[in-house]
Amino acid sequence: MRRAFLGGDASYDGVFYTGVRTTGIFCRPSCRARKPRPENVEFFSTPREASFSGYRPCKRCRPLDADGHPPDWVGRLLERVDADPAFRIRAADLRAAGIDPARARRYFLKHYGMTFQAYCRARRLANAFHLIREGATVSEAASDAGFESESGFRSAFAQAFGTSPGEAGKHDAVALDWIASPVGPLIAGATTEGVCLLEFTDRRMLETQLATLRRRLGVPLIPGRNRWLDVLRKQLGEYFGGTRVAFDIPLVIRGTDFQESVWRALLTIPYGESWSYRDLARRIGNPTAVRAVGTANGMNRIAIVIPCHRVVNVDGRLGGYGGGVWRKQFLLDLERGQGAISAPAPASPPVRRSA
Image (cartoon, rainbow, N blue to C red):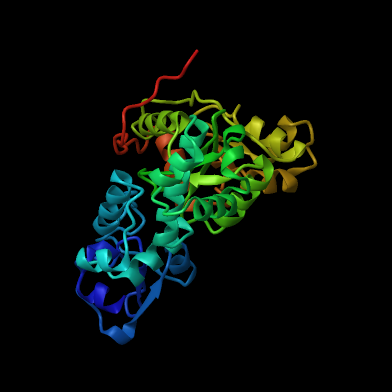
């Protein structure tokens, strides 16, 4: 990290942040400001950690203005995997491409919740899952996924999905994909019924939210795409571009009865407005449950679409937010017409919603 910071290596932007003790600011690795002495530098994995350690964001490199794009070397890896998920990218292939395997492992583990090799394996199995659901035989799916033996494929499949390949056609799954946004990369999930997940990738509760989602729905979570993720990507682009004030997409909401009542009430808060936690408690007919409402608000797994960012303290202060208070402020400013900007274009043509 010290070498990357002193060298201004932009490929590490988003991987870590640098706090400079002598100035009290934190920066991106690529910051063009004068480099401090190494002994005056400390490193953080998120802007939140740097902020809570007493550092303020640099006005030159603006580390809070996340562009939502992975470093170029990660983008190239993802493109290579997408082009042929069955191809096994080994450590030697990474080194030949100028990528340290240990660096790829650490980056994917931190941002994707799994190592690069585990990500590739999950993509192969995800494709096999969809092939089987579309009518392919187990042998065909195993061969397409690059497995040398059908027995090895069956074992890996059962471990990943909790069911045998032969039973896969009877089950749904949560397809997980990444969506770039002006507030940083988002992880999105959807079943064949609708969207069930939209979270900030640096949220500390992300692993807990994924585990809860898996338990609530009783289906595996796999890297992949489906029609609702394509619709969500398009509508988020319109939202961040300031041309969409309401999302028109089916949602899969699973929680306790109380949580679901709070989340459905959140959907009724008008665009550009905000309610207090007390207002929300009254809305669900339980005015004394203000603290419980706040807890349920924080457990919302479909950020932005279910607008938990529109809930503030009774005195108007922002209060907490799972994605960070700066994101909450950004979203509220956007909806109040104070910060509309264009989001990255969809990676693929949108899928029109069926009647």
